[in-house]
Amino acid sequence: MAATEAVGGTKAVPAWRGGFGRLWTAAVVSRFGDALRTAALPLLAASLTDDPLLIASVTACGFLPWLLFGLLGGAVADRVDQRRAMWAVDLVRGGLVAAFAAAVALGHATIALLLVLAFALTTLQTLFDNAATALLPALVPAETFAGANARLMTGQQLAGGLLAGPAVPALLLAGPAVPYAADAVTYVLAALLIASLRTGAPERPPRPAGSTLRAEMAEGLAVLRGDRALRWLCTATTLCNIGMGALIATLVVHVTDGHPTGTAGNTAYAATVTAYALGAVAGGFLARRIAERTGRIRAVLLAGAVQTGCLVLMGALPVLAVSIGAMAVFGFMGTVWNVQQTTLVQERAPEGMLGRIAAAFRTLAVAGAPLGALLGGAAAAGLGPHTPALLAAALFALAVASLGPLIN
Image (cartoon, rainbow, N blue to C red; front, top):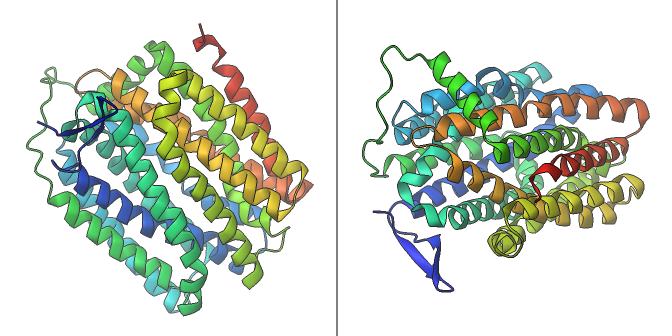
């Protein structure tokens, strides 16, 4: 049985023993390496081309596999041993990033290679993320899902933003390949931690005779469509992800006023990413308490409304100090949204279908990100580097409005 800790008289968060601590450590270590890579990639792309649309295309390729393989990843995650799938995927990803680090070190990096790497890593991530979502209930009891998700997201933001973000400029000074080599090492460490979990064979209802992956993917979509709360939440998250795609893909251009190369540009970008992470960590500590006071759906509404205001400020007042402050608040509310979203999916998914429900939700929600990245790149190229923030604000406002039917 999964262990819990009493908090304020209730079993609100999971105990570190029983496997959750190792899963948390693996997630944090892996996130640290991922943050090194994802922070360095736009800077590398900007050093290879000054075309905002090409820079944004690297981000778009990092989302596209969810459209092609997201549902398949969820169906496979519901069929296999999630623990084994996760450590195997991490080993493969570690090998790919190590090979990319070698290419960068030898001076063979190109925009085409960046696009291929982003696509390949996200293709593998479609299985890993769905398996991770489905594995968590095997390690912690249902009443601690929100606390477990908050701890995971807080730890990942702490490692990915506060530790990795400021380290990127220093690592780049040591060599352009160093962030990617470090990422490869963290994949291997995470794989070893996940392999050490002892969860036993997953318990699932027997599949009907002749059941196919295609039929199981369709079943996941049907269940998501039939759940009113998840359906509207997925719609809102999709709109937000279009906005996030536009913002993230052009953030390096926004904070450097269209001139992303050089030490000053690296420092400004790192400061903005770090501010986002600080806010996200704080949001992780308070996400559960906010939901307890407002309810999960109202917590999501509050988060989306505040994020909309942050984006308006960024677009209307394109000053670095304003962007840093706005991104800190934006990150805080982003974690509040994500904790409630993930917990609702875990709570409402039928037994044996969590991988497919999570995959259907992610695939539909992430579908907008590549479009947003390309729209953001086009807007920055045609209308100026600060336009994507205003575009994202409009999309977040629509997302908040779309949640209206869930408020009684």
